[in-house]
Image (cartoon, rainbow over all chains, first blue to last red; front, side, top):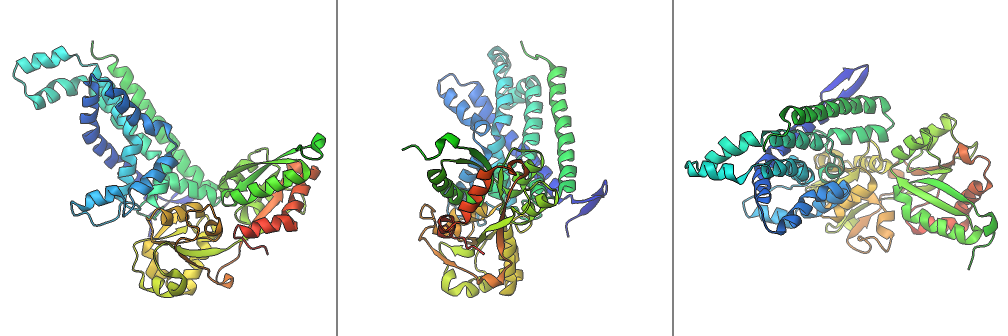
Length: 234
Length: 240
């Protein structure tokens, strides 16, 4: 049975909250691993192809999430290209209606929130610093951990908090890709939608209140990071 | 040609459950041609529309996808007296582009050799409750249950099947008989007998704001006329 709790006299299941945190955490991790090289590549890019990449990365900011979700539904379906591609590596399951599908959807949905802050942080690192460390025989990894990481610290913190928070608030994509399977793909935003649709306003208020408090805290964190670190590189 | 009575033409605002979009748009056109009055439609999930109305959204008419929300408005005294009526009854269909559900629905459901069957979320959508009832009646609910995915509306349930993410699903007949539907004449469907599930009644009301607006009543009368009924039935609904 789902773990029900009573808060302020209202019974709600906490399952969607745990699931949401898990999806958001995993999405943040994946975007950190994929977004960092992508952002670095874009930050150092001289050609005008950069404009194309920037536009593509920003797409989830503009497209309605349900549109993105509908495309994902087509792309991730069992006979879709993406699934066929994974089959080559022995993947046997189905992406839609699964945790993996939620994470893939969220990675696309939250892409700009990870890549944009990282790219701006990387752009602010002067080439001469990297050149200088290279002349000191620091290899690529050394340079990343001793020069780039400390200088782009703020970018990383902002990227992580925004990615995490944005994924928590996701609705359209998870609605389409997830299939609202209890305990598997029912995230908080969908649980709230369900409560509103079934006129269970007390439950909806409780979950919405939690989301509201969480969002304010995260945003304060982001602005706090911005203020504390100020303009870092110059 | 200009519409007759255009000097007195009025504009109504109606909140309409998303599943009824095409049907009511066509009825709206017929109504305009006949009377010169225009009805503007806002489409959305019934619960959301209900919440908007409750919080003062300026709608004259409300067409819900169930009876619960109009009844709730009735209790809250936000509705014109005696304006409540059931305007359409949804017809449930088990649809699959690939499986022989028309002839062999029972075997298909009993064997459950598919990965996913989509239904509308039973918690929020009458079509979902109807789907569960039919599966229970057939004695296959427990077998199929682990494979059920919930669309947030009957439109999502349909999309899951249409995009191949679920092999079959309980959808609305109205989604299959529309010539513009991607499922039109593709695959098979089975219509469970209507006594296998509680009627999927969709109710409408005239809201307090339009209490004294004769055009609101006129539109409801037109919807219930032969002309209106014909359109509703053509789109795969029955009328109680």
